[in-house]
Amino acid sequence: MPVSSVTRASAVSHLSILAATPPRSIAERMADVFVANDEAERVTLRPDLHREGFTDAEIDAHQVEAVAIAGKRLAKSRTRDVNAARTKSHDEITRDMADIIGSLLPPTQIVIAELQARGISRQHIDLLLPKSRAIAALAFCEGQTGWAN
Image (tube, rainbow, N blue to C red; front, side, top):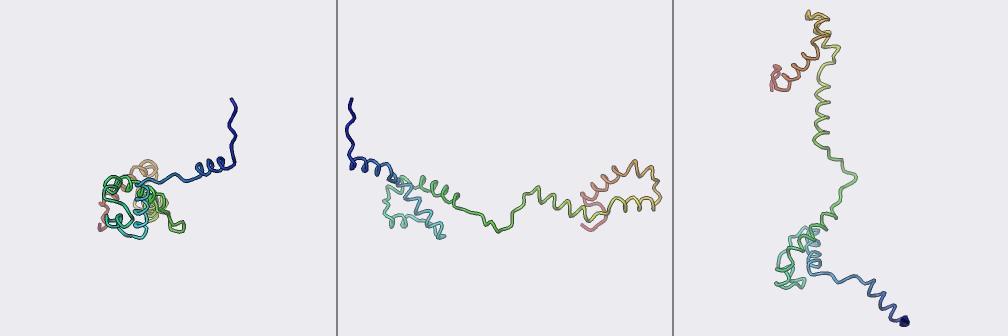
């Protein structure tokens, strides 16, 4: 079966149809209004949509979909300032606080020297220091160390 000959005009016409942007739906055009007003820090009201040429029937039928489309566009357009300080997670803040609190506590060598100065034997220090330190840490966490809380 022979192929019909294609003229230059029909080929250009066909390509221009393929290259053309598809017509936008009412909801997409309405979303443009929502996004533009949001970027201008204005609330979009029904009279605003009327001024843009939408009828009451179009607004009632497509407003919910337009709000969803606008929300997706706005979420994509929100950018983070790359020069701004990074916000820390709760775990990172907790670790930072633990480091600060740990820096306020005396080093182990000073604790051992104080225990020896108060008459605790070396054998008892070697055996019981980890457990005693844990008990003291728990008392510190519960606010029962004698410091004004």
